[in-house]
Amino acid sequence: MQSVTYKLTEFFLIFIILPVSFALHYPFLIKACLAISGFIYVIYVLVKVEGNQFKLAPNIRWMSFWRAVFVKFLVIACLTIGYMLLTAKAELFHVLYQQPKLWVIMLFAYAMFSVYPQELIFRTLYFQRYASLFTSRSLFVFINATVFSLAHIFYRNPLVLLITFLGGILFALTYDKTKSTLLVSIEHAIYGCWLFTVGMGHMLGFPG
Image 1 (cartoon, helix red, strand yellow):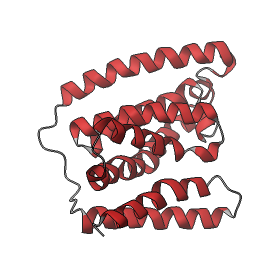
Image 2: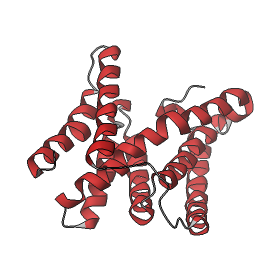
Image 3: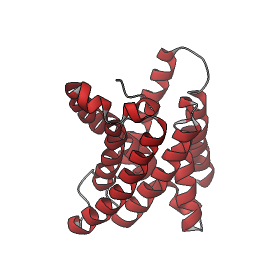
Image 4: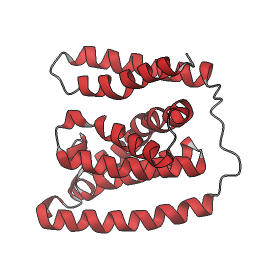
């Protein structure tokens, strides 16, 4: 399971074939089974092959992390509020105002059941498993953002692909710097929850 051929095949199946297949029309139950099976395989590889113990990364620099996230969040907030004002002013913060209970439930569910699994796959597995296949760190980060964006192709929305590509770059850089699934999951959750809050959640499958 450590050979280059095996890793390339594994990469192609997990990050290319499976996400693209989800954009095709076939029964949802089959898609769900493929997704669950794939995630179980990822956990197996992380634990049994890569030897992960899911402990906090040593020497986490919390203050540095929060400062960086705060600056990036301010930029994202300004851009997304401006976008909503220009394109869908009536939808700005509409879930927060009209369905606050749904808003709270979805923030929790998204952070726990969507963000963390995504980061285990697209950051933890990707960085630990495939770094040796690349000689260029910039290309390594670019490919990570690309496959993260590709994982959202089933939305069939160019803006979603752009947002997730840019988000993928941010998350890849954070993981590359911190080596912490927890920190990159927190950052991912903050930005994703904000998109739902500001009124752009419908693009990413949020209800309301």
